[in-house]
Length: 110
Image (cartoon, rainbow, N blue to C red):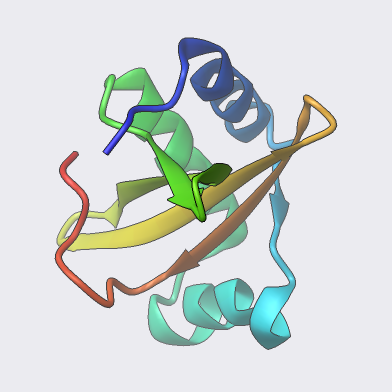
């Protein structure tokens, strides 16, 4: 599984640490529902967790579909004892959209 580029990781890290990342509205606001109802957390915590993941130099992968990169993905620690799958999309070179859900398969290596 190929790793994301340093440039992509920098864009994601900056957007999250500066609270400029946006939450995905896909699948009837799935990410917000998981954050609020399942994990009892917030979007701010998700951004902080992604920023911390990057600061600690943990892995961020390219998500490839049909031979093309469609997003970035990582296994991020939301809080102690809970690792979640996070998909990160960069649009227009600077807009970052985060989507998160529970792992359906084995978690990605951190």
